[in-house]
Length: 79
Image (cartoon, rainbow, N blue to C red; front, side):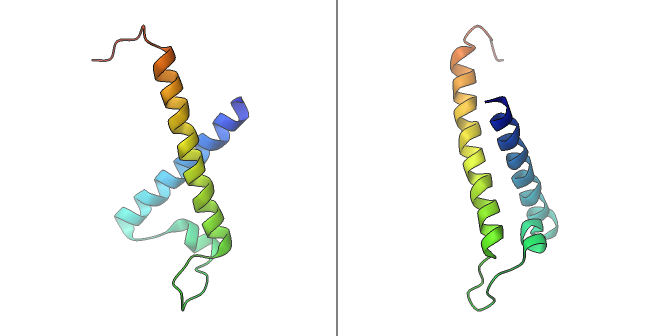
């Protein structure tokens, strides 16, 4: 389980950094690395789409981890 947590956290960080690059510099690093796909359809390459899907699944998994963490730590007071 620990390995899955680390892998999903790394994917979420990659996604966050990619979105930061898109917002700041209009550079999509995933598309730059894995290609742009078919120009006539303006879609990402299949590999880039897989990376995006993995990042989304990792984010969903991390949301679940956050919910579990917050429900088990009721003794912690957040101010």
